[in-house]
Picture 1 (cartoon, rainbow, N blue to C red):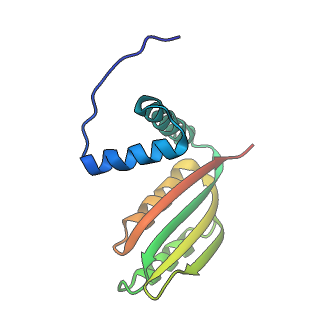
Picture 2 (picture 1 turned 45 degrees about the vertical axis):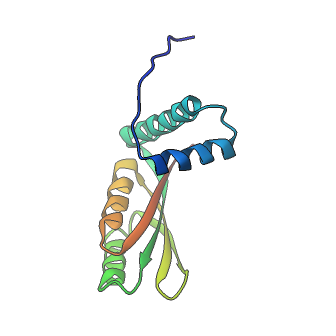
Amino acid sequence: MEELYRFGVSMEQSLIEKFDKLIEKKGYTNRSEAIRDLIRESLAADKIEVKNELMFGVISFIYNHHQRELEEKITDYQHHNYKSIVSTTHIHIDNENCLEIIILKEKAKRIKAIADKIFSYKGVKSGKLSLVPMV
């Protein structure tokens, strides 16, 4: 077993309370193991991006469809990247919000660049990118 190193982490009380609830729900016995898993997950995601191999990506995001010109920007950007996009799904959440899911087949760095651009649009409230290596 490798030698363990101790270090401190500072964060807001509300954030650590939410984290403690999450790790309890997931069954962790302590914060250290949960943080180690988060670091491992982050390193694995970085490794996928660094390889820059052909893979599948799923971009999911929620946006305010009342935001001026946002739907047009999203649609135009998707048309600009039509060769990478396999499928899209649009879901009306409520009177104000929509969920868009875009499935892509492309090199990892390009998928990430597409996601980052979409997430940067004013009116996009939250987003997530999942990369899945091809077998």
